[in-house]
Length: 360
Image 1 (spheres, one colour):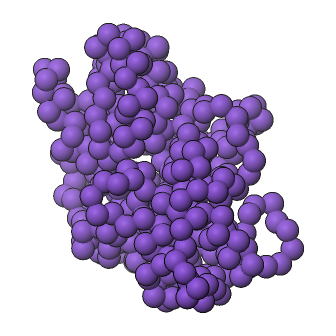
Image 2: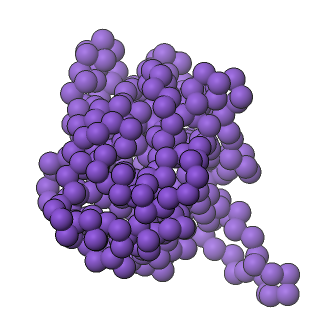
């Protein structure tokens, strides 16, 4: 899922080449070194992996849940002669997927992990994947389409109750007209199920109405469906906790996010793990000291792409990079309860679903 773009950017007509976002900044954060082993948890088109392999005599474990991405990377793996190991799966499952590979390499931990969140430009540009309303295709949106019993976007819009659809659109898409859109979808599906992206986009646009805007009216609804169908925020929470477990002392974590929901989860996780959580009020007693920090922030604020990069790659304009270095402290206790996940910034709706075992 690397070389990503946000759903808001998906509304634009930027269809340039698949360029890894903030590559120079990610490499500076990871600081690849000879002999180091790095995990590209969202391999996608291999942009970060190529950068890491070119920066030093490193080895990379590339993970992607999209079978197409893994299949397309076989030539790259062959060209790097054993330095790239490809793993099919979700980066949220790194704690299970990566240790056997590290064991085969004779090392206990990784020296760096890169995560590039969201949907890739490669996926957006394939109409048959059903991510984009610019290109009419089947209403799917599953990054690992056909895997297991995961519901597609069509399953969601054709079967969910209006109140549930409205909540998904409001919480995960931040769509102000969520209720109106949900009602329009339910009325329209009485004439037959939704099967195509263009059909859904037209219904959403008509429901929202108003003057033409910079972004397509269906942008937020498509974002919400994609995040929900792929359990992206739950996967992010699991992936961050896995990174804490997998990184060696001094290992670096670099996460590029593209919208506020993702960035909030990353920010809160790193704040909690680095001891940077502020006391809520000077009138209250000092917060009781928690576990020793397991991460050290490399920067207090998120980095953003340069104007030069945005001009080259408009899809990068909403990106934020947060990075941290693993300390020698033990990993913190993992709290996958609804309250624990909500504390990390997951919306209550998604926190409850993840705690119960996922959106599916």
